Image (cartoon, rainbow, N blue to C red; front, side):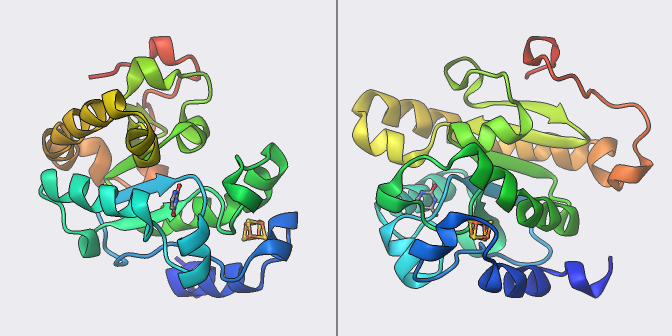
Amino acid sequence: MTPENTLIEIRAEIAQCMKCPLAYGRKNTVPGEGPADAEIMFIGEGPGFYENEQGKPFVGQAGKFLDELLASAGLKRERVFITNVVKCRPPDNRDPEPSELEACATYLDRQIAFLHPKVIVTLGRHSMGKFLPTAKISQIHGRSAWVRGQLIVAMYHPAAGLHQPNLKSTIVADFKKLPQIIEQARSSEMAQKAPQQIEEEPHKEDPTQLSFF
Ligand code: URA
Ligand code: SF4
């Protein structure tokens, strides 16, 4: 890995980025945070009000719920990497536009390439869509699938649980399954190889053909 691709270099580039219109409304960029040896990565949608104020991911209400969910799965926040598909706040917390997702993808791709996490947990549709573009969250939430040599777990966005009480218990139940999925990834040979070492792996764009477990 060249120094340009270290997390610090990626963070510095994001801080200067003007590649999409979200640059103009931001107070702070929110590159994400976590240790360089994190095994698990959580990917949300984009910074909200408090994240934009502080330059840190998931520090508002959804972040508080995420902290509880992490604890319930036996995970320490400071041991996982938390980021978003877009690194600047969309105005009024609207969904990121496809063009913004595309402009910002390079940073997330490089964070993933650097960390090579054993498990990627997607929080919400936009994050899931990066790995499983045709999947439906209502069908695959709480389940895992190998995508390009990486074990992906699709979760509902924690903010959805705050707005819809019936979803909250679903999210809580889904996070309880995480320790077992992480164990499975740790013991898998696939996760121990660098992506370039993987020759044959499940890489099917049709999620109905992916093996979820
Ligand atoms: N929601 C997100 O998707 N990301 C954050 O960082 C905060 C709230
Ligand atoms: Fe750059 Fe991403 Fe911010 Fe757009 S959202 S300005 S691509 S860092």
